[in-house]
Image (tube, rainbow, N blue to C red):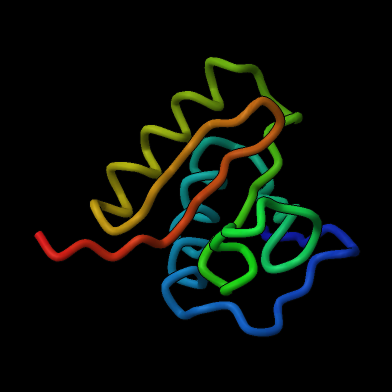
Length: 102
């Protein structure tokens, strides 16, 4: 099941990020975890962050170990493909949509 942190703002997210959320929810469920979105186009990010364009999402990782976070990150990279940037940060997994020509 998918859950959003109270402060998360869903207004203005791109369909590509919605797709990433759906894929992530399936992966989290298959691994036995609840997907918690901690940020979309809200919170504080770098001025050039894709979050402010509705093109990035962060997922909570505090409910599992670093090894599981790395495993889920790799599954997300494989499932989403080359147009998505997936990064395992210290307390969350970040996904940004970055369309590529080739």
